Image (cartoon, rainbow, N blue to C red; front, side):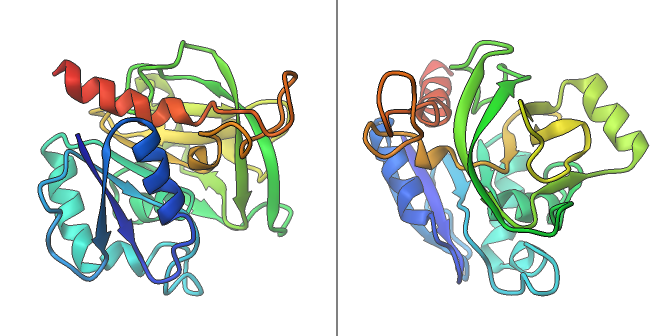
Length: 231
């Protein structure tokens, strides 16, 4: 399986995402924001970091990048797409997932290992999890507050489009503790925490077993690989 990782000016975690793809047993394909070619990949990742134009509104300009036309078309055809942090902001700005991401309620950048609860274990990126499973994934953002109108919140709650919720503490003021959402089809996931930073022992969150041993994030990437092989 070939998974494309798009680099935008300001991307910080594209290489981390590519490493996570390889650890999951797939081939990572480097893609550039200015191109109009997804190179026939089977899935796409919009990595975290920052993107040009974030000063206007996080992800607003990057969502208009040339390659995003191909991402939108691929998503409509059922290709799995994962947007992490800044990538989540791009997906929201491109209307591939509902809602919007705004400045954290406390107006501060936050970095912490964050506990999440799996709300939807049936999407392309979450089938390896159990419903209501709790996992720990690193989080780092300044514009991570998920917001939406009351009608949108009701719709995504009723449709099961809330993929993950914050547990223990809501780090940014997101409505209903929402940390990640999926589209109606279940192939596009926007996630504020960073699963690519919890894929390899020695580099992830601390666990009861050992320091830096958390690898809960790897399941996102193995899920999409296993989903593709099962089709």
